Image (cartoon, rainbow, N blue to C red; front, side, top):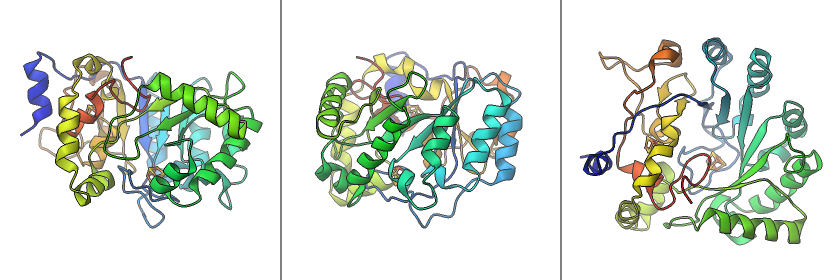
Length: 321
Ligand code: SF4
Ligand code: SF4
């Protein structure tokens, strides 16, 4: 039973891929943190990381397209050995192509990564950084002891390099709830974050994105453990907002896994909902004809209610006011 698909049908909507604007690449599950809300089950012991051979195949495919945005995520994407090589190759194809690094901030201070922030600034890579709260208590509870302090120190480094200050060095923060509830309105939270981070730490940034936790992977386990999974699903379903459907990120994104497999979004990726050939074998990016994916039907499931609840949710934050 797919209650999400039933709900779309009930309101006369179909979810189809439109023009691809973003190639989002999940380069692996390796991470220096183990956050409770992580939908990737990432952590320091994970071995799944993208090889250089896969990166080269992705670059060859990208070279045949005009997709303007490459969005690198993980895990901590910076931890794969070829992270810088990947960015250099994307930029060499077309310097104006926009690259995003989804960064957990603390990695920028880890031994061996001290010059990474400078590299990102030099390459004009946009940084979208997780920061689930402006108070140490909530951040450390969700992400681990000391993560708040590390994140603040990293934000100061980024500000010093011009991130969040200079026009061409965008620094956006991501808020996600620390429990089984929907995010507060994005604009209000952004105002609070800007005030608190500036007043207490002298930190500035561009935009705050609110992202709803989807009930999958580690967050689903956390909900199950606390007997809240059904309650949370009911909350998401009852908050379904059909005005969000048009802007869902799966409509303009192709999501690629660490082996090059293809999905509609990073959440479907974690649920192994890989694009498939008619014989049901899985599709890899290099099997896909970039000119033939418009209007492709998007694979959905109950977890999709997390993207359509309230103001909606995507990798770029809320979808409607
Ligand atoms: S949420 Fe991000 S920073 Fe936290 S464990 Fe997962 S990938 Fe790492
Ligand atoms: S989880 Fe969200 S982005 Fe992914 S397919 Fe469902 S609605 Fe689209």
